[in-house]
Image 1: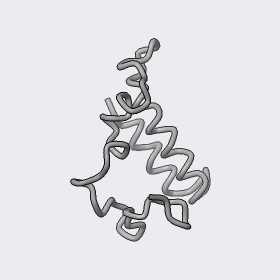
Image 2 (image 1 turned 90 degrees about the horizontal axis):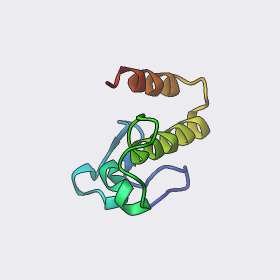
Image 3 (image 1 turned 60 degrees about the horizontal axis):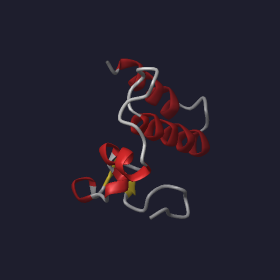
Image 4 (image 1 turned 45 degrees about the vertical axis):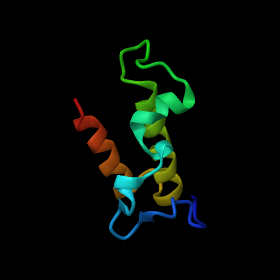
Length: 85
């Protein structure tokens, strides 16, 4: 599922979107991460689910390796995280 560029083969990097979003496999769906990895529903610190934290950490790692830690993509992602309730 991962191409030579490090991104999912179904990810359209030009449009920055998933080409198979409605048919994506279970492991691509954040809601299913907890079931797949056996985590708890909520963290002890009240900071959201372990699945959310795992998905965010994966995104941060991918953005950092592909675009850099100070890139516009990283800044936009971090801004979106801050805007979440």
